[in-house]
Image (cartoon, rainbow, N blue to C red; front, side, top):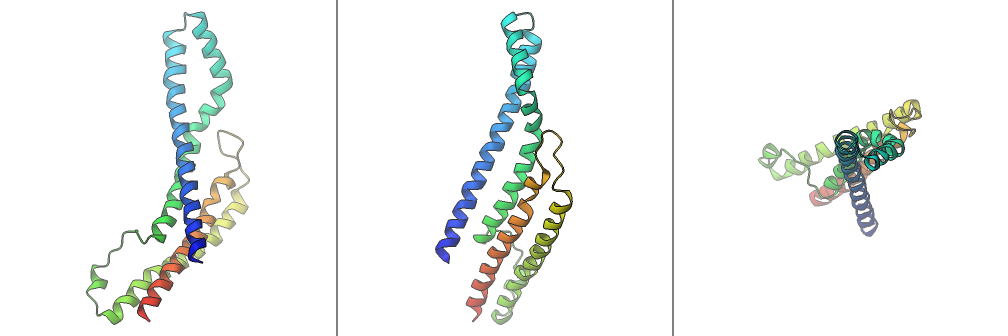
Length: 180
C-alpha cells in the first residue's frame, strides 16, 4: 500500500506540474498576443502591408484562444491549489496551531492531535457529496469563452475531496498507531 501511495503522490505531483506549465504558457501567450500582436502590429505598424497582413492573420486565427487565456488559467489555479493541498496533507505540511495541544499531558496530546483530522475527514466527505451534486446540476453548462463544460473544471472538487480523505485517513492511522 505504501508503494502505491508513493506512485499516486508522484502522479499528482506530475499532473500539478503539467497544469502549472499549461497555465503559465497560456498567460505568456496572452501577454505576447496583447502587447506584440494587438499593440505593436495593430497600432504602431499599421501602415506596413506585411505587419497588417500578420495582424489580420493572428486576429482571425488566435482571437478565440486569446479570450480563453484569462479564464482557463484561473480554473487551472483551482486545480493546482487542491492538488497541492493533498500533497501537503500527505507530507503533513499544513500549518497547525498546536501550542495548546503540545502543553497537554501526553495521554491527551495524541487524542487532541487527531480531532482536526477527524473533523477534516467529515468535511471532505460532505464536500465530496455536494460537489458531485453541484456537477450534476451545473456541470453541463459551458464556460464563458469557449465550448468546454464547467463540469470538467469542477471535477477537482470530488477528486481532491477523495484524495484528501485518503491522505487524512493515512495520517490518522499513523497518529493512532503512535498512540497505541
